[in-house]
Image (cartoon, rainbow, N blue to C red; front, side):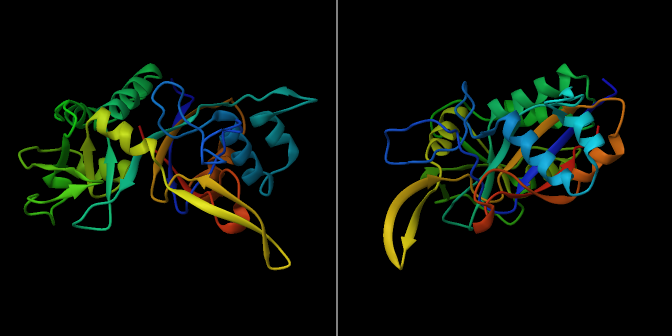
Length: 270
């Protein structure tokens, strides 16, 4: 599809895009999650609003109405898909963090680009990543070519789980994969990955009145260095204007005044 474009989102700071639902857990404000996988997600309405807000300072209302729509103009001519998880930082006892993905994420990513006939040169490498992780509860694979500083995984633990080393794999487009997923990539089986992302960081927030605590609440965040992807079906006009989102810092979600949600957006080339 000629008018389909694919983008990556890299979180430069912690991200909170709230789900807006009432909760009876200890976490007052939870992030948006995919209804099937329960992985963190950026819903299209939230992403669209953030992109519109960013471009509003650059272009006139005519372009914005065409791209995003308006109550007097009808729906927008650009179709924006949700921000879907690519990788997320996970802690270890050997280095501050790795970037983790799982076969489910890879499968969904391949299915998405196939649906829109978006040809990429590294598809065979994606298939390798999807297939080599054993589907047992503790399968965490540290891929040697993505983690050349790791000589041995003996006693290596990631989020409390033991890891194994994959040193026999050869990837033809390693640099492309690192540009999309990030460096120090590891692959975690779906079940373990689900358990890890089920418990995202929770930060205590406090409202002060004359120096005294008036209200304490807890907010869930997607940690910085998390990566998402999203697709856009463009209209016939203002494509150059829409490119303004690329290689720029765009604020997504709430709490901008305390530095949340600042992201770097880049095109994923076909």
